[in-house]
Length: 398
Image (tube, rainbow, N blue to C red; front, top):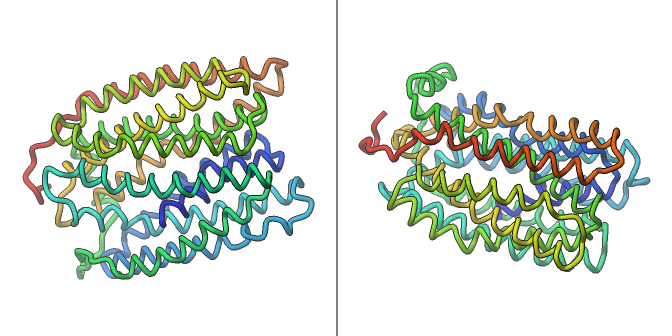
């Protein structure tokens, strides 16, 4: 329920909505920057963990996001829907939703950390993420059918996700937690010192941030290219989104077992090479015929498979470097630093693409160059990660 709400209000649907409203590439990039940029809100929230239960923080953030999302349930009342005022209003809603989600997400991984048995991090998250990939497949299958029948009508889709987000609050209240409440404040500078003093953690965060930045810069503009330059319909784009989560569902648990068995570093290498190859593939898509659809499906399915493997290995490596008794400091500061490094990627990509597209009569050539450069950058992601081998630290160690 939580991930369906999260994805519906932060990724593919917002991009499709903005494109349908005539938003510029800069607007699309700005929307993509909200989620990583607003993770900075987790720093002040981290200080509250010493005094407030994780469940309370998670529910409060979720309720704020739900309130911010309410106007999007009435999109069809905004007239005219393609005005600059309408685009700005929608962007403000998405920004506020991202803020609430990130405040709540401060405690999500620390909450889950106490549920994981040593040596089974990969399988735990492989199984957990398989569940929400299945939920997202069902949601996007329904969304694809809806938009095929009613193009441009996004409000009912946001409404379904909003209801699921509300139901999540009741479930979260029942979750057990390992308390980190103490008489001492959690200081941000102490959390930063954990990264400063641990070269393995620094290498992991640099590689993770680089991978996340490329993902944030690529996926929104793959959708923009499909809709605006090649001519794919909204329903066809959501079909690819369905395929994306199907690829994750099919591979996540297997990646978890592989990562537990051989460690994260070989998984990082294989997935980085695979993601770079797929970025080269999408640069050759130029038509919305059967061949183009097949190539896009391969891109989305393959990207899901390799992204799933990278994500499981990333979580395993991070948990290996995190003390099990007080995980919040390490996990929150790791997430904030990673997001701070990649928050500008989609906005910068949008501004550069908008400028390049303004000065050319061959927009597809601009996108080919963009995805080619992204492929080269993806290959470089493994450079810092090559030193991240499976930690042998005892459970609960620093």
